[in-house]
Length: 244
Image (cartoon, rainbow, N blue to C red; front, top):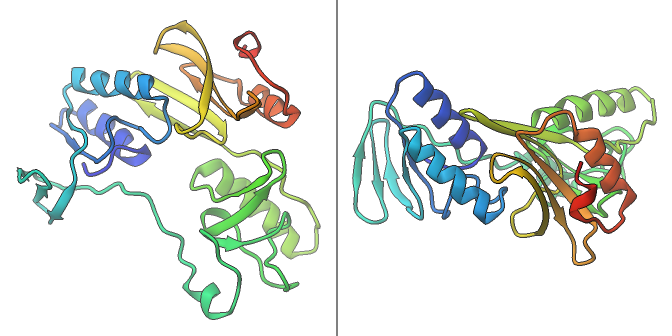
């Protein structure tokens, strides 16, 4: 398994659970490093190893084919199957050729409409859309956004005029652990954390320099997405007492 993000970690757990021997190879220091706080990523990496996954961190891939991977350190890993879970790049060639604005995706407004056109729209993984609650644009590659954005933009193509102010959530399962998350969940941000059981059940708020929440990770905590959305939209400084 090349990659330690969403696809890599989920497939590694699923394949191991069916009795397959899995090796993960990725350049980051830990599993889901770009999403999870460093300490939690370290815990998850050790947890995967306990489950029998051979996790090769901080390791690059210089070549790969259907049955083997050669790493940057010179190791050759033989396998029955090689899977690369590396994320996507949006297909914007048509938009580029048509002179439509592109910035990590096709740039659209709150209706899903491209600038300067009344009859061109983009939705889902390919769209760079505004999020007023966070004051910036996002491009999201997860199920909730694809379904919700597609439905609203489709309605807008028929003249509905419905602004997309939805804060998409995403989720992942990692063996017996799992999480739901909403907003800007980026390990480079500072965090405010509240743990019922350290690294096993708790809430992580990703905050700006004023401790205002940008996103929430609910680790083995469920049905709190709406609460997270409320706190993000409120835009007030947060402390651990509010993380319930």
